[in-house]
Amino acid sequence: MSKAFIPQGYKPVLNLYDTQRAIGLIKSLFQDNLSRSLSLRRVSAPLFVEVGTGLNDDLNGVERPVQFDMLDGGKECQVVQSLAKWKRKALRDYDFNPGNGLYTDMNAIRRDEELDNLHSIYVDQWDWEKVIRAEDRKIEYLQGVVRSIVSSVCATEMTLRAMFPQLEQHPLLTHEVTFITSQQLEDLYPGLTPKEREDAICKEKKTVFLMQIGGKLKSGAPHDGRAPDYDDWELNGDLLFWSDTLNRSFELSSMGIRVTPESLAKQLELAGCPERAQLPFHAELLAGKLPLTIGGGIGQSRLCMLLLGSAHIGEVQSSVWDAATREMFQQAGIPLL
Image (cartoon, rainbow, N blue to C red; front, side):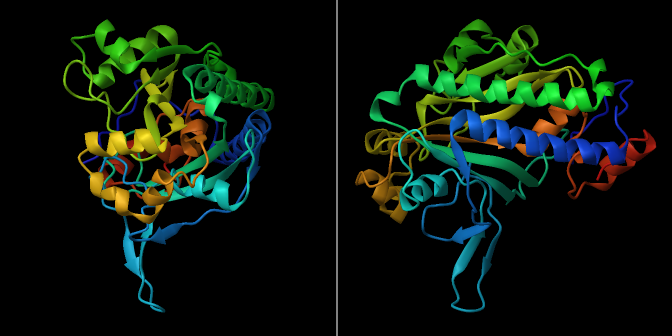
């Protein structure tokens, strides 16, 4: 059952027609800003990959990918859950050099997603990946990339408000980023759950990059689940903003510097899945045949929600919603697409 709710007194700022205009503007502006700031080139990407290649993202390891068989050839395929690993292979295959990268539209179906104001079974995001040098594999480089992404978000927001001045009733996003590790956050709020900690730090700082997600904390559990075979758990994080509309933290992006052969082997052991080392993608990575990279995903509908001050992702994305949620929003005069 969906956990969606309607904030007290909430009404959309824009009508449906202007919302569609604004969505188109946001997507056009942001991808141009992002590609310039990070030196990215747009490429085409797959909607599905072959089973057994190791290219699909298994997220937290429990989500079931949508799978089907091909009529011609009988191969089993899976709809991608993200392109985290495919992008790294593509950078090698497309012969990208250090300092340059790619971005693409990633469309996924996550049928096990728990629906609420921010989550849908349909996922649309900009997946990006960039080749880096060995000396770039450090926290300072990661933080510089995060600041570039936040600058792209804020630049998009300013242009959007010039076109739709009605949006000025919402507070501007905070450009300055607060960086904190998941262990520092647990130490700061030891009595709170991980989600409550995120809300607490974001309510105070507004724009936060929460680092080092995936490994166990002093409490014995990780802050959040993270697959062991793309991000280096010491060099990754989530970009969070404060949503005044929802009165909660709002994750826009998950990203990180990617694993080396050494950190991949270590994380596969920690995650209890060393057998993945035999999969084609993992074997190539362990053999040092893939470039060093940094990358992540940035939610397209999430960004539209954030900049428009929307209360539900269904206001900016066409998907399937349960009957109770549709009825609740319809009675409140809030159309879901």
